[in-house]
Image 1 (tube, rainbow, N blue to C red):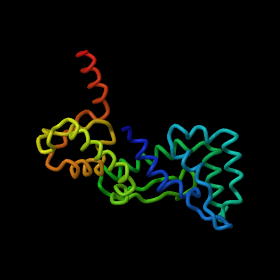
Image 2: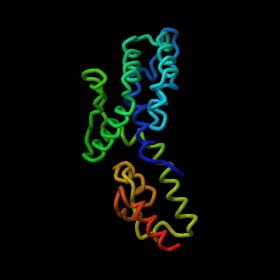
Image 3: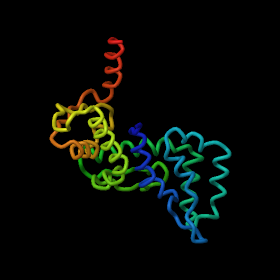
Image 4: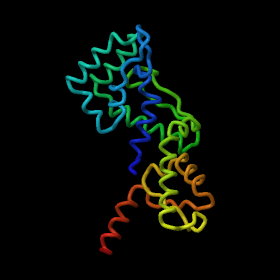
Length: 202
């Protein structure tokens, strides 16, 4: 299973940033604005494709799907000024801030328009990530089961990777594997170090 920080960021981007550009907005005909542009703009490896001519023209053609023209203007400003990656970086910053301080963070998008942004309290942070975290927990439980080890016999769960520092991530693992200590290693270099150790053994 591959779930990483960019997957968490995409969920938060769609929940917090993209609605400010029109995601979920109901147009004059009672239909929501087509969502594909927002999903692509919130997906790290697809963002750069939204800056090209065909994508920009497709977004321009959505004008008639908006009841509020100001939202469409914001979407076009993001595409024309190539702000997609900057939004993604700000989403990641707000995620880390809300988790690290266990307090409300502010998703600051005033580089698009003054005062534009959204609050990110710790509770909603966990809620937005719940579905992905549930898959991580299920995978951890399955690994233990396949290894033939009783969950209570585990010495520890070793954490590596930046996203493993998120409070909701750790809380989910504690619930899935109660009583098992979480040991935090090198969050950003642990995987590479582990591969080096393994390479020396083969």
